[in-house]
Amino acid sequence: MDDDIREIIIIGSGPAGLTAAIYAARANLAPLVIEGEPSSTSDQPGGQLMLTTEVENYPGFVEGIMGPELMMAFRGQAARFGAEILTARVTRVDLSERPFGVWVGDPDVPAPTHRAHALIVATGARSLMLGLEAEERLIGHGVSTCATCDGFFFRGQHIAVVGGGDSAMEEALFLTKFAEKVTVIHRRDELRASKIMQERAQKNDKIEFCWNHVVVDVLGDTKVEGVEVEHVHTGERSTLPVTGLFVAIGHRPNTDLFRGQLDMDANGYLITGPGTRTNVEGVFACGDVQDHTYRQAITAAGSGCMAAIDAERWLESRGDIDAQRTATNW
Ligand code: NAP
Image (cartoon, rainbow, N blue to C red; front, side, top):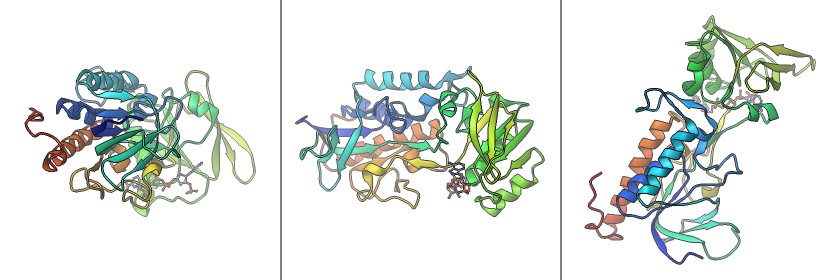
């Protein structure tokens, strides 16, 4: 049991959590970052960028940077300013009173393992995946969940998108800027996407549909060389000769921990505002856990900065910290 009551605990260590940590540490708030566990896909340290190869759209890197390398730099920068980083998975939180309680390890023990006056939630979201072994192996090597991030690498190629919702249509449309042909693989013969997105996709000459099919395998050892699909009614299998597979079957925010305590929308995303405030005073949220629209590293980092500033100002207004001590030049 850690008897110290922290000023701030940050849950999550993607671009949002670590940017919040950099700002909070520079404000002398000695934040504790609980970064997640390497074994878990939903809360792995560093978040979704750890599953990406090259990041070409993060400003400041003329030649691009590998996703894991970028996250190591974020982490090092946070540590340099005194953020403490704990590799563990949060299993329970109690936001009913301050200081807030945070548990790592056994959630059934009565006392929290950590307590803090303010909490920043940066637990991110995860892309839903098909659950194929090859899909996991080839992520970052032709399998992707982000057309904005990776579309550029598929110039002039034939690629596939799985899914029939707005995300799939959006990804497919975006990918036509680069690809020669985009095949949308959908498990039914009717799209779930909004009418306007359906129309746009159906009118686009580069997009073709592979109806009533599911992906059963991704071919290739070190890069995608094709996708094996199966007709859902006949069971007949065939191979699509694509070099990329974009999985767009939905996202799930990592908010199970906060159910019943923080307000969420129908899809489970935390509701924030004004700024990064949640419905519980002293709890702030940033990054993909509260953003289903932009979902970019740079927007997550920006909202992490906002959360740290909001939290610091809130703590200051509550008299929890000495305003003199945090007179920091942001
Ligand atoms: P979604 O609406 O839940 O659609 C997921 C799609 O993936 C569905 O077509 C579903 O098939 C398919 N799917 C799910 N699991 C599958 C599996 N295991 N194998 C194969 N296919 C599978 O998710 P979304 O497209 O990410 O959208 C989520 C929300 O964000 C929606 O409310 C959407 O309107 C919104 N959104 C809006 C925009 C926009 O307005 N520009 C863009 C993106 C997202 P079935 O149809 O058969 O269930």
